[in-house]
Image 1 (tube, rainbow, N blue to C red):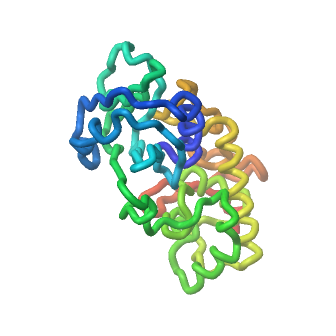
Image 2: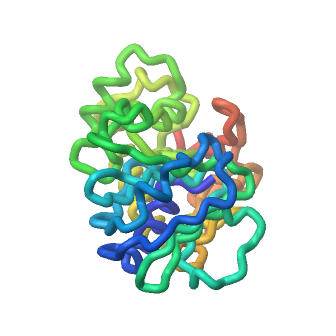
Length: 271
């Protein structure tokens, strides 16, 4: 599943090709995604100019002035910049074609992604209204995590993956950040001190920033908006390495399931 760094990499990859460009047409080949593509989307979008290409959590937002196109990549989705004449592959569901001769092509084999239209205030949209702060913003800090974690018995890994607490800390990066901070992912969120949360916030910001810099994490389905994969997978210290030696102390990494997600940690380095 594309996580925040992959979505941000996509945003940066496609933005130079579509920013300030006028839409000439919209081709919808498959409307049955996670939520149906609005039947009115081609009419609403054609003739509009993209004024901003932004991201909120894992949603890409194309601001066209009187509305916003909201795109989510779901489990297996990707966006590519293509020549509109390029042969259509299976699962190429939507093309947004621009007057500059480029097209933004949405590809999603599992159809868990979405393309929606927001009119009016987008932050009031049900999918965006209750989201927590962006993890790389100043609004995300140790004091926030500490105050919201008091009396929480949920594992700290589950806590930081809650989009109402902070957005975009997906499974891969939660594993990695907790390892860097020396915090065992199974610990109750409410048992962690402010000082430890300071380490965790720094680790989350660091691991996400590094992943964005190198283009996200290449697992099964993600291809960046520029057609190039990311390489952060080469830097993973714990995720996907259960049973292997810890990169710090050499102990065998433990693997458990938390919230139905694979969770890997070092019992010696993480307390």
